[in-house]
Length: 166
Image 1: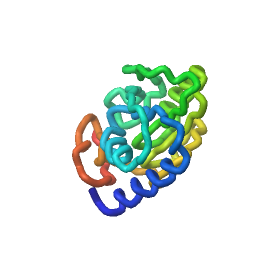
Image 2: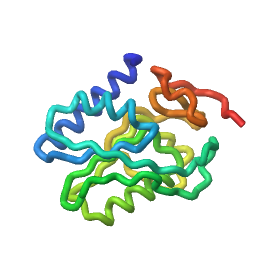
Image 3: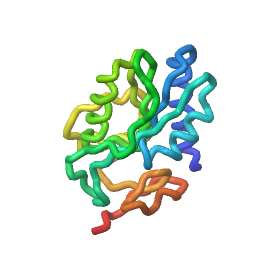
Image 4: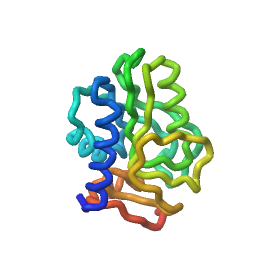
């Protein structure tokens, strides 16, 4: 993992460690993009936690969000009155996360926060509050470190800007 990413993950883990030390949170990773970031992040956390996953889609194998969000795999944990931390690879339009966070709020968690490795605010269509953020990036298509383009490039150890594939 490149040192810049490692430093950001360590910084985020330190912030999260302070806020969640005595809360036994449920950490919900958004698949598939967050899995590498989530794995690196939780290995640095020094408190009890549970991990669950959700799979949402709005890209439908395209490089632009179609705007129609669906939850393809729902997390299984009961989050009522629990502290929940959502971990995402990238916040782009905000459509997917807005959908998920509304869904989670409806289940009455004790608290709900968001950790994202990347934020692309220039593309935002719906507001999303990111509590823990790694990097803000320009409006360019990125791949690597879990993020993909039509399921390719997730395995790259760093984050790279690429031209969109048609």
